[in-house]
Amino acid sequence: SRRLFPYNPKVEELTRQAGLDKWYLLTFDSGENVEGVALRVAALHEVAFVEYDVQVMRDEVISAGQSQMVRDFVPVAMAQTEYPFDDPELPYQWHYMNDGSLGEKALVGADINLFPAWEYTAGNPNVIVAVIDDAVMYTHEDLAENMWVNSAEANGISGVDDDSNGYIDDIHGYNFYEGTGNLTWNKVGDIGHGTHVAGTIAAVNNNGKCVSGIAGGTGNGDGCKILSCQVFSEQNMASASVVAEAIKYAADNGAVIANNSWALPANAVLSDNRYEEVYPSYKQAIDYFESNAS
Image (tube, rainbow, N blue to C red; front, side):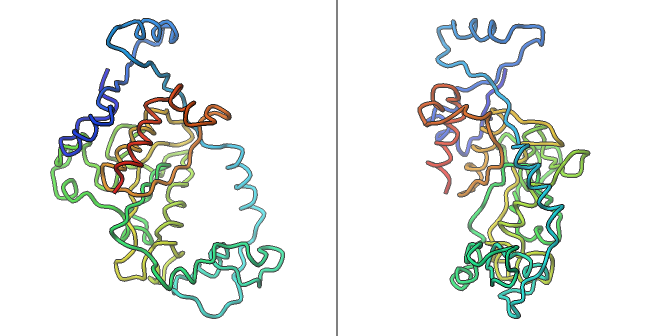
């Protein structure tokens, strides 16, 4: 067994206040009966909760539908002649600001009215957004400048936990699925969703490359930062413990927003009370993020 949320001296007091130091991940022989093990552990005087480490999955039905839409939709640029930034694919991002020139393909009003917001701010490097998903391709030409960087690990020794936070080589985030600082996005079956999401959040604006990010800045190093929390690899499903650990890690490393592209089985959780009954460690990790993300 091991602590679900690793010891980190910088946040151990907060971790203990939240009771997250008491959660342990128990592994046992595959020949054992899961329910039998749970009952034996629950009978121990020291144990207050036993939680099954259920699978967390991508929504395959929605993903399949989106893939079909991508195949059927031929990208068309809007007719608007002036754009706030020079990113070549911004005219195709009609969901940001739809000028109506695409007709039935994208009706007027089918957008988030982003351009007026950009007049106030296009991002802030002090804002860190955790992408809890596939790994983010941190080397991408339109993302590299806006990636979160753990300077202690980036300037430290490979294979060493230079900042003593319980994670080795977490330079741009962490691969919780494999338990390593090596973020992976090019294995067979990887779909690149984490990179897609990160681009929408903070692709570097006004750099003459690719797309624009909602909070990608103005091309002057002023975009928000992306922290990659990898919980999926290839087409494999993650587990609740992996996602819970990623959520706490995000809060402990300064994220104030978490983008979550995963789901529990349908109807598994319909209320906060149900979270506390069935997935207490999960719920406590979410509460910890909401209380400590700053």
